[in-house]
Structure formats: C-alpha cells, structure tokens
Image 1 (tube, one colour):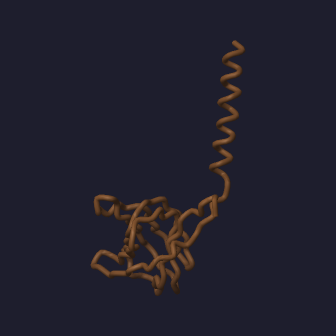
Image 2 (tube, helix red, strand yellow; image 1 turned 120 degrees about the vertical axis):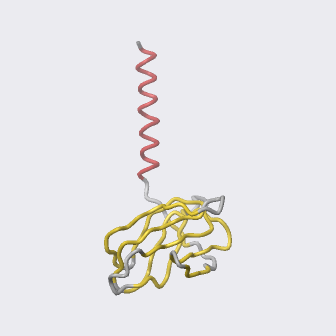
Length: 130
C-alpha cells in the first residue's frame, strides 16, 4: 500500500511540474528574415527564405476585415488549413500558431469591410539561453 502512495505522490509532483512549464508565459521573437509576398487567385502567400518554427502571426493593417483563413505549407509542399477566423478583426491582430513551415497563405473569403492587411509578422519562441 505504501508503494502505491509513493507512486501517486511522485506522479502528482511530476504533473505539477509539467503544468507549471505549460503555464509559463512564452517570450516571442520576431523572425527577422526577408518575407516574399505573392498574390494568387486563392489568397496571398508569404514565403520565408527557409523553414522556421512559427508560433505566432501578427497581422498589421488598416480598417476591419472579416472571414479569413490561415493555411500553412507542410514538408510535402501541401497547404494545410490551420486557423479559420470567421468574425471581423481589427488591427493589430495576433494569431497563435504552431507550425514548422516556410510559407503561410492568408485567404480572405469576404470582400465586405474596408480593411486591408499591410504587413504580416512571424514570431518564434525565444531560446532560454539568450
């Protein structure tokens, strides 16, 4: 019986440590590389020169836009839908993300609203050693 109590105590301690690590606030760092922007029929593609661990996307612009989707290019060069934002957004707008990618496509489904995206910023998590 004491063995089970000891095991439960150890599991409880480990779960608390894991939860504490998840609840600590992340420090984001701007991915400071040239981003190529290409307008296509199905949206605007923002390409990084190499793959990066993108954890947050910040949209900067003017006005209000609505009904956008975020797609991420995977390792097989296929587009995967990642986030759908059906409501209206105001700028600046942060989109949490977790993707290892070299390109992100933003699709605006609705032309209502007088807003436009002017700049897209990509962020990753800062290394603890910095």
